Image (tube, rainbow, N blue to C red; front, side, top):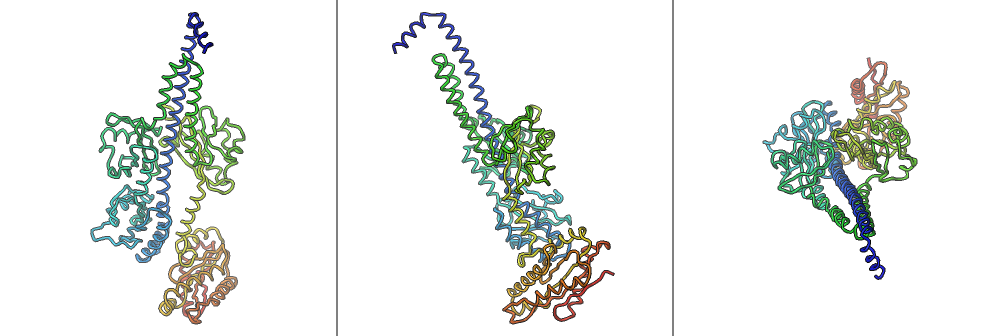
Length: 617
């Protein structure tokens, strides 16, 4: 205390020194104020980026939820098109829809009404629901939307479901006959739960999903669903819709009833938008301390410089904390780098061992090294596609009206990955100045999608291919081979087996025949069940009856070995017709089927296992 008093006494006596100290402190205070202002801007940008990332992830969740029913409709429409072209009955199509409903209801969350459609002028429902006489499928949104989109799978806006009497959406698609439509419904509860989680986790005022015209698809307040915000919510609603469609930044400040609201938004895959609205004071509440700090510094810096430096340290810790929050958002990605397009420099936000290997410690000249990165990252067959995606010269054109674009590819280890460009900063004219490049693994999603595809192609009873996938495989195979042998067969007196021993025993017979087919033919051959007791096979590169007879006799030996205990020793016999494919004759699948069908008819005239060759005249 003695030293301080002595210092103060001397300081008072020296006016010139006092003036110089005052000037130095004022300058220091101004410099520190400028520093704090810069920190404020940086912290605010970090907060805005974090909010944008949260909304982008919510948009991705919406896209992911919609992808599964879209895939289900796409896969099932292939088979139904084939059944329509083959003249299958309405009962057969309805049975197929029932089977697919059982499969997809266990795989896709939010589906329990099943697959249904308006097929050749008749409403067919896979869940067994029968509408009343006033129900007109052609006036329902799932049908009208599919018709207007001309074969492209479409997601409808919410509508009142006649079966469940609740609001739902549907994925639907127009089939190749230009009139039939297949569809599947989804409950809106998934979207409602997503928006409620956003409200709770982020202390937000509203969370909304709208279409491009301003119609509310889902809302944290379910009473708002169905409103047209371009008309029903005054100037605030109009400003919100305009911001969604026109803004490049993914955020804006809107005013409603004298209060300001920070609005963050992103675009979903089907011209929907997701928006999160937060009271501006709540959204940037952590920045209030920066305002206070700036005022405090102006006073404290003239009293003691060390106080100012301590406070700077405090503020730096706060900025670091905000940065950690941004990094927490980045944890969902395997790697994330920021790219400054003007300087061509890279900044690593999240990295792994692969990132270090690819970059090699060099964070400059990104655009000129893209081809080098691509060759190191992905499988050879995806090099061209990934190179085009990463190309910065076309990025402005590709991201003109969106904030993010993606590319899916297989890496060098044969794992599926998704790369995503996310706009961070744009110039006033819309050109991108900074962009994030994020990498995430989608290998599990791809495997699930492949499982769905296999289920749609497989006969559920026998485990071999079904009619639609089998015929499609043969059509694809014919142009690639020089010759082959097409076999058409069915079990003799199969109806008698069902009537005598029961359908359960009949199913065992069909399963045994399918196993004999798989054991008798090669993996490169095509074996499938046509339906009922009818089966078919296409054996590649077989062109004469001698080799064909040996192969078919091997199959008949397998049939002779089948023992079904419930049939009390009664044997299974097969009647088969065989036609040879010759590439020079340019035969169609229909022609092969016609010839083999004649052979089957002739074989049925003989008791026991029999195959008959039919030549093309």
